[in-house]
View 1 (cartoon, one colour):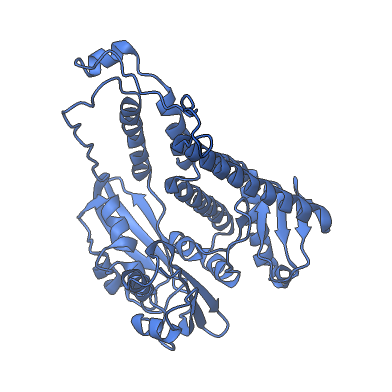
View 2 (spheres, helix red, strand yellow):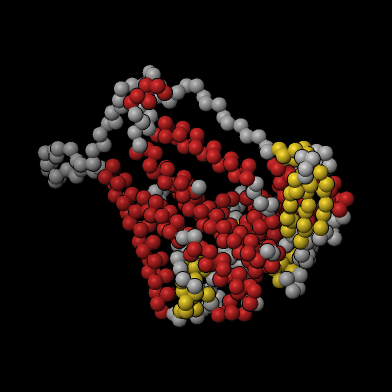
Length: 439
């Protein structure tokens, strides 16, 4: 979807709208539109004066030169990254790993990452348990099997020519995050447990690598990935909402290839309706100890006989704005690795029975709170703004409120506030690192 957005944004302006279509869409459109020529050369030189010949200066030529310097700089960064990866793969021991290669790096602090068919690990990863080590390798192999590196290379090439456009960088960053979601889903689907995998993500949490072409196993988006693991699976009807990109792309084409003024009548926005599958039958819970079945049913806000609505069910499980959903009730009380799996069972009478299997996991308390990236504001002053405090139970609501407090303080760039939890499951503790960029 993200790659299609990048490619369509390049192709749509190049596809001309047929003249017959233009007359049907906009009958009053002008026959053509001629843009003024933008001359990059100097005009005829004037006669020299006593002080010497006149020096011509062209702003368009300066802008064009700056643009191509930016393209050369971005392309050079990509080439340097590829060279760095090539040297890593050739200078260090490697062994066969399925259809690819496993490269053993000497630096113990280097995070696990992959590029193409190459998986790069450090000696620190050998201390993982056999199950964790297998999940780590499987995660990186999924990136290679699904050709995620080619996606990043394509995004890099597009970024060469649109380096000035922040939206391209945003889409490239989100593309890498989606790749991690896909690999996480493949590993947890095969392992059957999201809790242990969540432990592994937090255990190997690390900062980003100097190359933008690789897929580090655990980076700054680890919080988003854990939250994604706890969300219920997307239903088929919800996935169908992506089909609305078709009319959006058609309207974008009409706008980009317009031969005349845009139409005055605004197109009616498409509406979506939640999928309804009959009525709710029996509601049952498994694996819960922190909250009773009655408390969970009350928090769910649904009962036997109510219409079954997938959107409402998803919101009451994980995404209510008032933080009263079931996932929030657990994660706001220290259950960092909570997970819930819903199962639907259609009955002959047309009702749908709901069975929820809960994995609560252990609770975690806040240990150390650290600030990284602050130069002007003392860490103690920043920590006073935050609702999280050492010694209390982990809370997702307070974690989100902490990020909001930092963004609204006016001291930091709100688009670059990262939160990196670093748990110690054996001790039941979790360290929280806030990474900020001051204004």
